[in-house]
Image 1 (tube, rainbow, N blue to C red):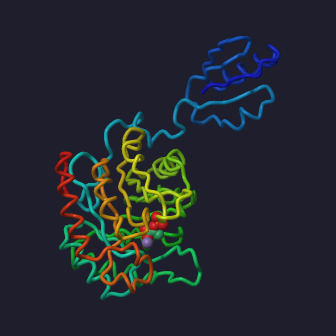
Image 2: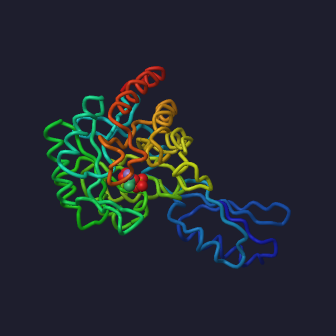
Image 3: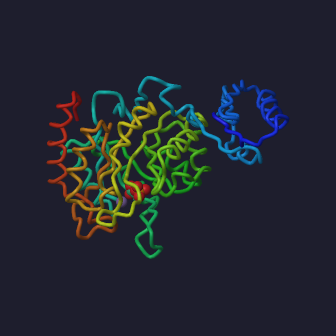
Length: 338
Ligand code: PEP
Ligand code: MN
């Protein structure tokens, strides 16, 4: 951390600041440039609060030079984390895992039909929302426990592990008992109590990037889960809010190589919520594979026109199957496979 003091700072104040840092176990290097004192603070600075240091009247600026997250960082954990979901491995250098399914579970017939189709197409896991965080309170809110039960039935019949979103801590027991990958939605990325609770369980967590979250905020949310003891975290880029309205969100593909550099955690891409239009989903999926994504989370529906949520961004089964075939070709070009 670098603390730059104001030029007019009296020497006794400089000494006080240095002494306080040293008392707290930091080593301080004091560099004077043109009468300005620049303090290089060495040690475990992730526990230092920039705001508190910046509150000192004599401090001009505080700059962090090491990441505030530790367990999520590549530095702390150089080798790739591979999350094992009932034998399906997400992360590493080999397979790219495709997860397909509807935005919402709507009926037993619907989820069974889609599960069969995504399995035949080559998906390795089934997604489906049972508790839905909708923008409008009047929109379909999900089948809740019944939806989870239908997903479990589809999992048993088609041998596909299931991914579903948890929205509140009080459903933790139900999710731990039934769901293979617990999704944290974009709107809950900074629900700190939920993250802490997910840190205490032994199940993979799929952590979506918040609607307007920076990469650092996202990794800090992952850090909450890791710090509480659960190392099975999968990051999911699902587009961020920008000025552009032609797509639902703006897919930030650059975060794939960036996250690979900053963190050891696997990263997958959700091109459905990122674009909001089914016609754009395949192109963005192929691009995500080329950019190094470890998997894709794609909305698929057997009847998109009548879907109870996100029909406009849902692929029909035949388009989903074509996407996987084309994705496999790209994956092989970069030495991976689906
Ligand atoms: C979803 O996956 O259905 C969903 C609601 O996604 P997000 O949290 O990314 O909006
Ligand atoms: Mn959706």
